[in-house]
Amino acid sequence: MTNDGKRGLRRGPLRLLWGFLLLGVLGAAVVLLGPGLLGGLRTEGGSLLARPECTVETSDGEVGLTRDEAQLATTAVALLARGAEAPDTSGIDEAVLRRLADGPSEEAGPSLACQGSAARNLQEQQLTVTGLTPRAARVREAMTEVFGDQSLGGFLPGGVGQGHGADSTHYDGRAIDIFFRPVSEENRREGWILAHWLVAHAGDLDIQYVIFDDRFWSVHSSQGQWQDYDAPEPGNEILRHLDHVHVDVLGGGTG
Figure 1 (tube, rainbow, N blue to C red):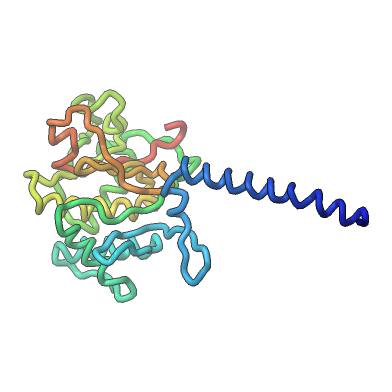
Figure 2: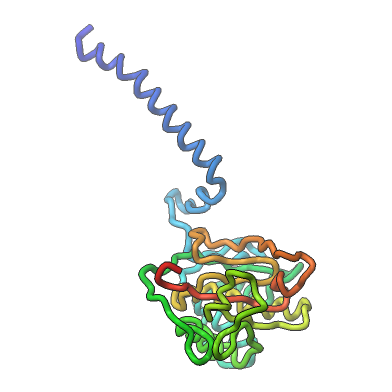
């Protein structure tokens, strides 16, 4: 046997060993990261595709949307809900629009999720005369433009100093509460229309958290899925955010 042949025989087991090691690493990653890892990959026609920026869970299954499509869809649904003229949504799956407008059939809850990506190097902002920072005030203006006048709270001219948790962003003028009272199935569904709109526009408005109905969304979560919100007092519907949508913005600086 030639020297080349001997070297080839020695390489064979080594390559096999490296192959097993690689499979072991991939298997461990799947176990540790779970569906979040596999959820980032989709197969279509044999090719691997990145997970879409936003998804809507419809009765026919999950539908992927670009960020622009999610913004268009949530805005159109919000405007139609108040009887206003809506933009053209002919390019968006009708099942997506129905789910965003009506919510899940069995019970109100989240349907749209978008990947989070927090802006960096934002300047820290102070309260203005409205009791909000300029970023929070911009969220308020954007909501008013789409949803009209709403029942708002969580801020006051000069700022608020009590009524919220010790580290609440309300004290910094970075948070707004939008009320949907009393707590009812109809009001919960209306609240989710707003919550979805906020998530879809989180990047443009520097939104950090959206909390509603025992669930929360965070811009710091790259997967962008709604998660269970653990209220400090489970029997308190206000602390559980059952009667209002909470939205706050990034603080900038080190906040």
